[in-house]
Image (cartoon, rainbow, N blue to C red; front, side):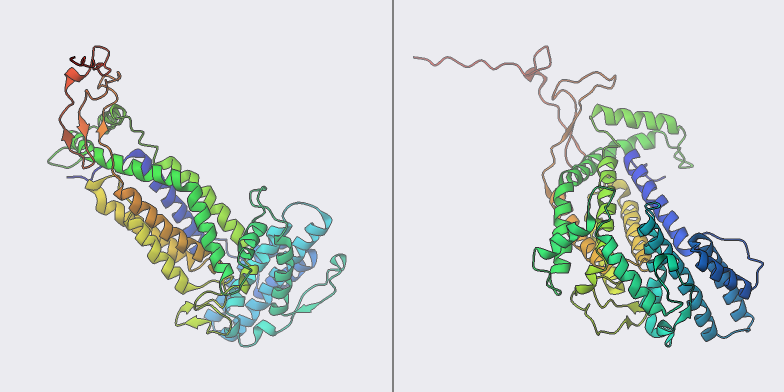
Length: 465
């Protein structure tokens, strides 16, 4: 027999999540494929130097992709060694980052548009992976490379090392982050700074504790919405045996295929209407929570440079940068793979304790939730994401699990019909009742109701004297 059909709200919610994961995964691992550049490696580098002089950050970024492809081709043809390839790529990366950085500064000083901060952020993101692997580049991080001077910006340097450029960008972005607003309304930097300074900005405590405080604050805000979503799932579970009956009614027993999908959908929606359940109401609260997730993420990104002063358990300056293939962070501003693994475990745990909306399809729903947790965690291995945000999300998963367990153990009143099969209102207690386990109970005594469908008034007996 075919699997039970999921409620529309759940299907839409899962579809949105899967579409987002597929898109992000494709962009992360494949990116935008470009046509092969016919220019030689030397010609591409010369054009990049011209782009650097003109502060053409868009064209130089496109040329950089073609230059990387040309370097790989040269290595494959054994025209250059791997060490030569690292040197050439680092030189080109410096040209790109320097161009983006100066382009952002130019827009900031001239007030041309609102893209100054974004352009400097892109320059920093381009150099961040190389900063994390700086010890593996055999001195290239401190080697100066030639760039064009920028007299209009009063930047006369014509040589700069990746380390010097990276430090310049960090200092500039630190100051610029204080004035940036999330969604144009909230100062994310000052919100995080306030939370950190609540406990004195102690490096080994305040920075990760701010993540816990923020997780509690967000959970308090969305508690009613999340509770509504969990209770909706439990109500849907009560109706699962009846939606299964409808499914079987329209399913060919020999082939296991649905013979009349439209008829099945109509009867299912009629069942929801009879018991006063909106199948889409479980999707709404979840979608409302998504903007909060993005808001918190942006707030922490604006504070990521300050998070470098914070430590957490094994994260402290002077430790090894790598544990096998796992990257370890020296502070809460850097990416830490061990913390991502802990995040994945807590996210899977949060998924497993959530009530399911369809007990007959419990296994598939659990597998889908676990799959989303694993995919999202794997993608976080490649994002230049501050560990402070991962700490926040670990605490969020723990709080979510606690709320799920509370909601799952709360008494759930039996469902009662609120409409007749024809669509009219049904008197209270006149229809079948479905208990928390999805079983029918006996109808309430109809003599209890009057002709209007309301309970009869009980006359008090006169006391005998």
